Length: 231
Image (tube, rainbow, N blue to C red):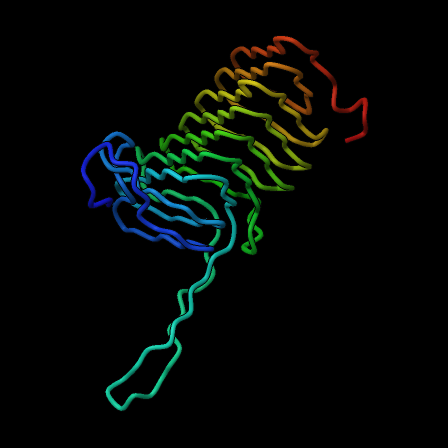
């Protein structure tokens, strides 16, 4: 966890890529010690305490591996490798995945080719909050079994082919505060509860399915069928 005082904003880790793995938690609640980062690519796995991450600017969720040279007592070198890790994932119920970024959040499937970029376990909740946009590349899903998912961007959000948001039994909230939300024709937002899609400009709809209710708002723009473009 972040060793600084509660409420601090000093950066804890600066790197091209950051690979995090914790059996318990990564950071704690944002007002009490999120791990502050300034990295290009991020992958994180957390256990019983979930993860609370505050990124300074833009970040890509993708592959990260680490190789160092270990020095032994004879001054010989040997490689020590933390193998490639993808995605943001929790491995225990009731463990949140919280990522707040000052810039655009880009989601990629990663080399594990599992069709997921962010996955909460069981009742784990997910928050992706961006000071820029959110871009989900092909097959880069955000999935929670029975946890709520919120994807909130100051700018626009774009979901490429097969990039889905799925919560088996909880709500989904997707908002572009000052921009548009654009789904590919094969992007799906699916929940057995309610789904809210809110954009200041346009909403381009691929596929949205809820057992309860769906709200779609395009405050100053239009609600558009993605199929009309063959996207």
